[in-house]
Image (cartoon, rainbow over all chains, first blue to last red; front, side, top):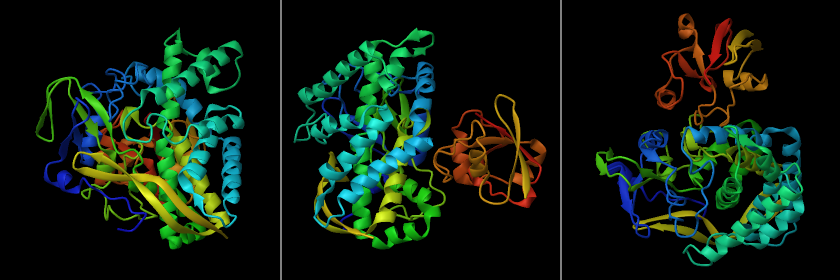
Length: 385
Length: 102
């Protein structure tokens, strides 16, 4: 297999039965694998609930390491809508010109710093740095804060192994508590202060609710952005002709970003808790069990996507679910798209080609399914334009 | 050049002119409220949902299967629904009136 390719381990199960059962701690999950089923279940929040016990819709389950409800992610309509209405204007700020300028400057500075001829380890020294710095814009806090987040390393919820690590997660939770206290003492124009001043349905947000929004903002946009950025770099290292094409045809860059999100699917799946006995794909799904919406599988569904296992840079019809679907679609998608768009613009302006040196793939294991989601480490050399 | 009218959910009518590209891009350029076009026009986000006037459906044309599947699960869908990223501007669209769905 080519080094930048992302495999589709779900094809056979998707075609033959449309679902697969995988284990997770003591709470097994029925993964839904076809695009139409994934979309229908994502839309049906009454039967496929997000507002279950905090941490349960995440796979692997975070029930044992988290009690704070992530908001609006683990809240269902109608309250979900009220939270989204509060948060959407803030999370659409990446569409503003000054935000885009600052992001461009951040990414240009980073890319120029790696154009010195020395090999670069992309995960820790590029993608994590880029993601952390960009997050200061999303939170509207000083750039210097990113240094602390970079020092946490890539795994905020996990130690070196795959297992969830409660102590490690507490570093983030304690940090967020302290930041909320700081904003209470001295309000500013950051996200914490906006939330402290806000009301939802006529009520002020509790500190626990604000913490829930902030945990989501930190956790939801960390591994996903790092995977998207590092997979993009790996892809260009193998496909210099694609970097050249995007340089020559800037008008297709928007489509290329959507195609990267489809093909890389930085988040493999997300769970829901079934609220009543029902069926998925003619398979019984009992109340109080879990299903997952497998974005990665749905995005390779050959009944919808032509040549699903190829990156087609200018794919015109691309109804992917890389940012989820329906009510709970990704709140950070505007920020993520702006990061990818800016990265591609800066690479086109400054980088002629990228040499792949070596890398260790990050493979997720869901029982018999083994899916590459990114890299543990990736060494490349950036060649200036 | 085609004159296109968008009517937003707060009942404000905006007339814009376009020559080429998609109706979604034209709406976003002109800041039409309720048309976000998050995915840039690849039929992935359904944030450009409009209702076409009943007697103008033939101008807009029929939605593709993929577009219909997207619309099926969107709020406020009707038999006159289209995702306007999938409608290319041409002179034939001159005078079309589109009500923003969300």
